[in-house]
Length: 69
Image (cartoon, rainbow, N blue to C red):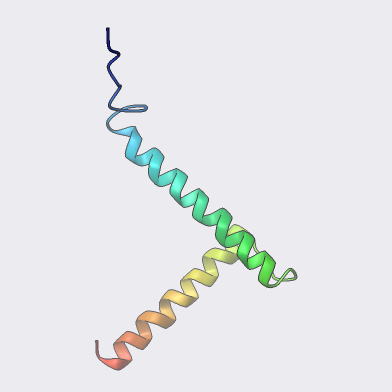
């Protein structure tokens, strides 16, 4: 008798949320490790990385507005 594969790991609703959580945490760990390798003296806490991302996003979107895109 063949076994039937379960279509969902946890549930239909929770699986996508779980996947997003795993993806975000993996990206955070990788970015934190790379930033620590670039400059060991720089603060690489979650709040510092968040602030850096916010500054980079603002700079990017302000540049887009200035260029008229």
